[in-house]
Structures are given as structure tokens and as C-alpha cells.
View 1 (tube, one colour):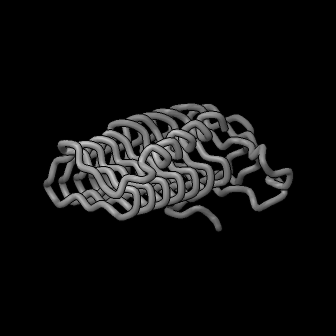
View 2: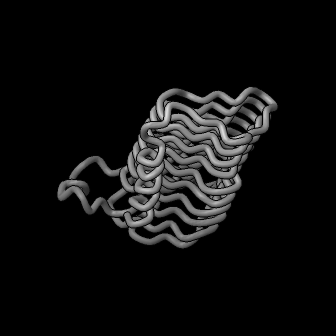
Length: 224
């Protein structure tokens, strides 16, 4: 949880730093306290940051860091960013979108469309993680989120589901459902510090497995 808390803390520090500022533009950077930010298709900007609002990066647009605290982040097809981070909100990369760093949220889903790529990895605490034919160059880490990897997704790192140290009842709750779909590859270790329901397609390839037993399935979909 240390890395996750550090990510959340960094974003909250951003909120405090911006407090009292209505809106500011520094060169190509866009910074706001309250309000959503939209980057037009094909536009190039520096950092785009807000505290209370969502961020949408249009088709083929490019930004540096996309940060918010309370709001979602969406990269439309072929859009690019250096990193995408929020605390309370989802992050969605549509088909062919690219993030050269890490994608992080604390409370929210993470979704990558076909051909989307995240170079470093994905992190959240609460929220579903879905990859449809996407590529993750690093690892995928969660605490309470279920995962649907594939079909035809590639994860160069591993998968880590951490134990929830803030809830004595976490393992008594419904275990997260982890699915590695047909044609998908997870090269690194799949490590589970809490109970999960792990389904692995007989057409998927995975690395070493720790803390769970895989249920193999045929066909296109895992059992419910």
C-alpha cells in the first residue's frame, strides 16, 4: 500500500498547492482548481491539471502530465500523455491511446481499449481493471479491483493483488475475480496476497503463480 498512498498523497499536495487559484495558464500548461479540461483533437499541450473536474484529451492530441483529484481522465483514440493520475475517478484509454509513464487511480476503474498502451504500469485500490487487446509494459497492481485481461492483451510485468490491511473483513468479502483471457500473455509473476477467483484461458500464457490456483477454461469467456 505504500506506493498507492504515496501516489494519493502527491495528488492531494497538488490540490493544496492550487488552492486559492481560480485558473492559470503557464505557457502550454493548463491548471485549474474547479472545472473540467478538454484538449481539442490534434492539439498539443504541456501539463493539464485540475482538482475538481475531469480531463478529456481529444483524438490524436498530446499532453504531458494529466492530473486530477476528483474526476475522470479519458484519452480518445490515438491520444498520448506522459502519465495519467487521479484519486477519485476512472481512467480510460480508448483504442490506440498511449501513456509513456504510469496510470494511477485510487478509487476508480482503469480501462484500456484495443491497441492502447501504457509503458510503465497500472495501479489502483478500488475499481475494475479491463484490457482489451492492449499492452502494459510494466505491472498491474490493485487491492480490491477485479481484472479482465484480454482477449489478446499483453502484460510485460506481473500482476499483484495486495492484501487489504485496512479491513479485517477483506478476505471474508467476495474475492476479486481475475480473468486472463484467450490469446493474452502475462510474462511476470502473478502474486496474490488475498483470496481471489482466478480464471486462465487455455489459450493464455502466464508467468509463475503465487497465492492462488488457476481455474483453466476453454472458449471465449470465463465462467461467471
